[in-house]
Length: 152
Image 1 (cartoon, rainbow, N blue to C red):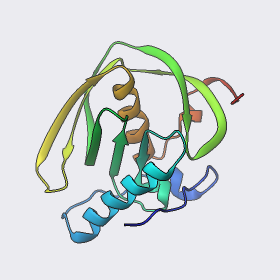
Image 2: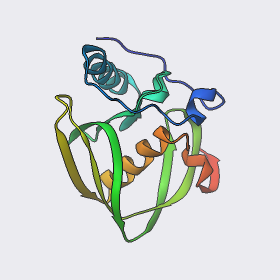
Image 3: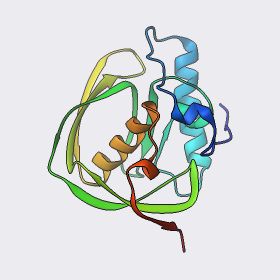
């Protein structure tokens, strides 16, 4: 497929609410594949949302090295607990900050065939899911971060 340039903070698309996918088309499948390829090409990235490659669609991919998830129209159904940990973002290079997030989340969405899927994840993967879904709402981690600082 294709590797896209990742959109950086300051680009208006990162602040827009992404559009919901109403029909799974070949273009949506291609978008999932392009997100996967772009994420694989990025240094130190574990998740990517369509707005980060300049496309206002509710699509995310996550690859922790142990688990790969792709979700269309993801929604956080529930969250439990809270923990603060350090985050960074491919769209905000050079900065990290401490962000409070749910420890455990249930996320519903669609898979690439348009079938409903539900994931309950905790810890790091729960954090990544929340971070990527924030992108679909036009929210960046820097909006929620305390102790924002340069990466050393």
